[in-house]
Structures are given as C-alpha cells and as structure tokens.
Image 1 (cartoon, one colour):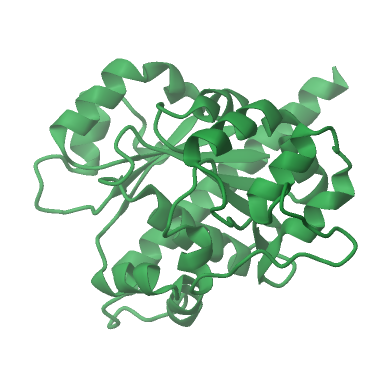
Image 2 (spheres, one colour; image 1 turned 180 degrees about the horizontal axis):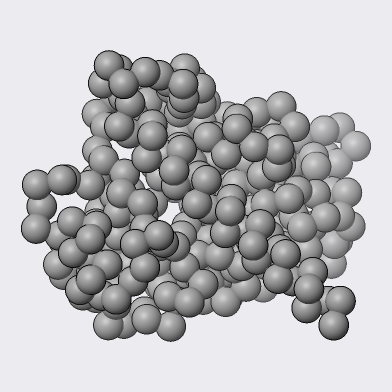
Length: 278
C-alpha cells in the first residue's frame, strides 16, 4: 500500500518532518512494516532526520560500481537497465526500526534532474518491489514540478495532504488540486489554536469532513531533533509522555495522525479484498 505525503507548499507545510515523525510512531506502535523514500534528492533527507545521516548499507552479494552508484540512485539504475528482481531491494534498505521501518537511502551522486528522469521511468517496477517487501510505503513527494510526482499521486492508495493555516495555501489547494480530495486525509502543520483558520473553520469553509483532518502544532524540540538527526530517539522517548510534559500536545497529534492513516489504509485494503472477491 502506497501512502504519498505531499503538499502544494512543501517547505511551508513541513511535509518531510511530518512524515519522519509519523513513520516512526506507526512503526513503534503498529504491526506493519514500512519502507520510506523520497522522489527527489536533498542534502537533508529522511535518512539524516531518522538517525543523523545514515548511508546505504549494501550487502556484498549485490555490490555496486561506478556506473550504478549506491542508495536509491544505484537501485534505479539497476531497474532502468532491466534488473527487476524483487530480492535486490533488500540490499538497498537501511533498517531504522528492527523489522518495522526501513529507508531507501540517497547517495546524492546524481544531478536531481537525472534522478527524477530515472525514477519516472523506473517507478512502477520499484513500487512492485516495495509491495513485495513491506506492508506500507511512505513517499515524501515533491510538488508538481517533478516528473515522478504525477504518477506517485495517481498510484498512491492514500494521499496525506499537508496544509497550514495560511489562506493562500488553503485556497490554492482546494481550487487547483480538488481532484485529490477523495483519496486524501489532511494534516494541518504548525497548528496555532489562535488562528482564525481553526480545524472547524477549515472543515466548514472547504466542505471537508473534520474526521479527515489532524492538526499538528509546532514543537521546537522536535524541529531540533529533525534537523540534528534524532527523530527516532525523540519520538520513542516521548511517545508515552504525560500531560505535564511540554511535548505532550505534539506527540498526541502525531499519534492521532498515525492512527488516522493506519485506519484509512486498513479500510482501503479491506475494500480491495471485497472488490477482488467479486
């Protein structure tokens, strides 16, 4: 099952930071295996955020060379050249949480445009490999200027749309991207209870069920953990914190978002099973 984390304003709506926190919370609390990845190369990627800059951990039997490279770039080049064996993926995964959360690292050896081109041409066999290897795939998805973004949003079983309380961002999404709404849930990032755009107001104004939206407040300690590469440590340490803890509100929101996503994915899987039976 493919879950795309996306926004029409990626940086403003902290898509990557939200995915990092939610993927760790889902992996700790749930029974599912998750593979996370990005569809663009970045200097501060999910690997850096999870545990301070993990690199691809390639096994000897796979090997790499100058032409392949390592990380997701090397994997894509293998696929692009026709090697679509499902078992090759395992060697390109970095384990973040034992048996529950894996990441496809980046080596950043390619120019972003070349990477985007190769991903766009290899994404369907890559998704097939991931489906064979894990229950869920969380994809940190760039805005629409990437070639692969369109197919990721089409192929995704669920889209986690990251928004904020800025009217221009809200108006742009609901005017320009309304076709995504039927298979989307929403995170309102850096949520401020004093804003005029409360959850209830957004739900009413844009005719969205409030059950499909979770607000996540800004948390400076988590932001620092994301930047410094200690997301796993921060989330695992605070996951069961009490109300008197300054991180309580943030953690509760992350847990609610995780539960909403998992419940939605389970419902989609159930619908697929029913359709297959008919």
